[in-house]
Image (cartoon, rainbow, N blue to C red; front, top):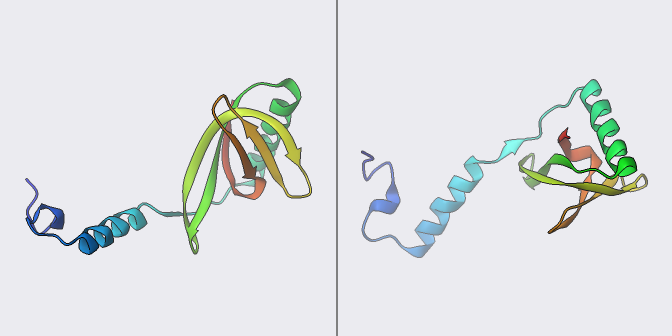
Length: 112
């Protein structure tokens, strides 16, 4: 059983500002630093991305999104790569519900 000291939201009277600050602190605890990706992994990512664009099949792309300084969160989406923008170094990932431009420098995993 969790004590009232460990969970301040269980106290009967909590100001909205206190609750918002507590929830913000919990969200900041979930932030992670950008993982380091090895060169061979990057090459396999590029191969899968090019192949998805050429053969028109869906892949799952995970990328890191900066939120607060060097910390951020990871996002994931499946879809077909419709365009590779070499100048801006990003890809256009299209699924049934969404279209997302993903920066190539922040991609942390690609799966088929």
